[in-house]
Image 1 (cartoon, helix red, strand yellow):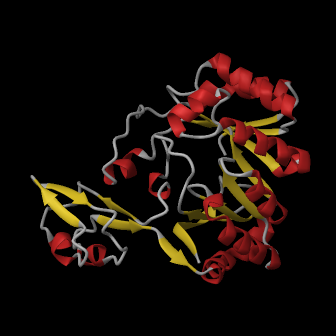
Image 2 (spheres, helix red, strand yellow; image 1 turned 60 degrees about the vertical axis):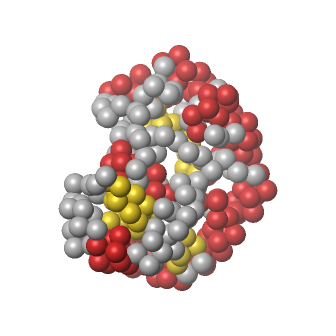
Image 3 (cartoon, rainbow, N blue to C red; image 1 turned 90 degrees about the vertical axis):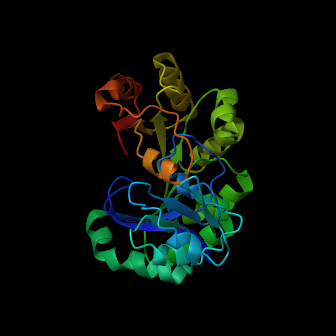
Length: 298
């Protein structure tokens, strides 16, 4: 079994060609700008849309675990009590509730993935495992990767690199492409904002590049107020070039996770303005001049 938040068919930004992206639960980081905050916890997460809710209390009354209550008209959910039965979701006539996270058999996931096999073959696509951090569920991840390879699928993994090297070595033979996040050169600042281990991330990246540089695309999310200083971005590109990285994707900041964070009752403290692609053009040109392939966006 593997815990999944959702499966997205016809994805075109998660690796080459047309792909199906499987979003897994759990993450070793806690980035406050995360586009998929519902994947950070390994447990099911209930999203509550205040715009749809009419405070009828049906969800509260239908919950057998008493995990929902209203206080001064505001919705509250106790994740520790919740067992993921979805009674509240099924009873909500306003569609104001969504439960994100369910355990699925790998065969059921791959059955869904294989529906588009013809498109993968035509476009040189395949399946991408994302999250969250797929390596949180490393045993199940390795099993489904092996099954995917047996079905002739190209496999990609979107990863933070923030996990033991032994886990990476265990899964690497079954992964055709790593979409590897590199968020900050300063380990202290990375730890402060995301609880990530910068040295571990660098070590794992170096290992992958030594194994096969062509299996790695480094993704650099440029986050307003975190790592968007021009001097830092240039230093990071210099570092990646010296390490042997050949392909870089520069990802402009967006606030697509804001709505889901609010539905989870979490504050979203980063700006809401979307970063224009043009802001990243000087960095793309710099990377190209150093001999790396570079593009803006995934």
